Image 1: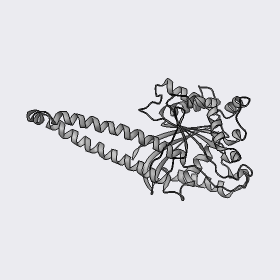
Image 2: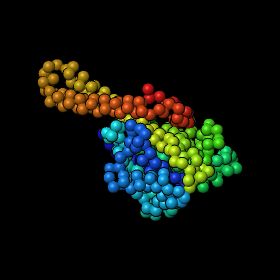
Image 3: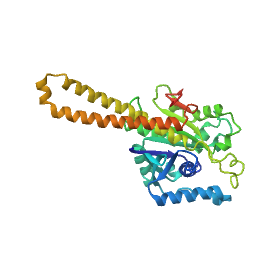
Image 4: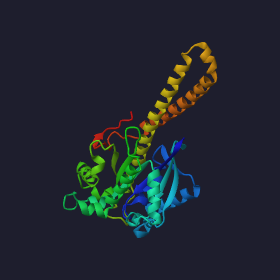
Length: 329
């Protein structure tokens, strides 16, 4: 199983971060060959109980309270109940981005951001019910705290972890509560989201970005107290992050295999005396090659599993501002 992946989800206290996380964990349990498992069984029970409350209760009692203390969740992404990848997920108080840099919550956020493998930016569909214009753009950016989310990307650059061709750093802009936007043309909505985060779509920026609308139910915008829970697209952001990490791993593993092969060719092409002298190193390199090749094949297998189970070909994914198509098949 690949090493643990850390995801930081940023959004204000009304963006639905916790509901998305709970829905992602529980809503996929019965309808997909992919599933999530909490490494702490008691945590899994608590998350399932929260989801049951959302599904079966009504009124204000159906929705979980806003997070008041940062909490790290540990998940396993499974295929056919077999672990594929470990995830670590930070849920935090949405107002933390407004706190001073000396605040403990802010330090936790910044430290976690520096260790993260990808960011999820949450923008509530409530801010996108109407078109984004020059007149309301700044108000939306401030109210949704999109302007503060960008600061964490700038911190990445200052820490010399700017994304480039050799290192994937996926960003998912999640339009939560998409039920508020069903009346809008989706292409216009996507373009409006890009207006809120223009640096992510600049030419030659290197940013790999998905824009993904999600909802817990299309009726909720009109009736949040009693609307039917019908989750949509909750699994797509994690599938995208998994794809990004796996493709990066393939490139790294291929390079490692080439380096070992080149070294073996040098040693084995020498005369017999030198081969005998270097026999221990040749044996060690052959073993390293077998181990690296096995890991490479496992990664390819995981990508093939993802290709069979998840269609990313029609999603809105951009690299340096240019829309790209990912067809895993």
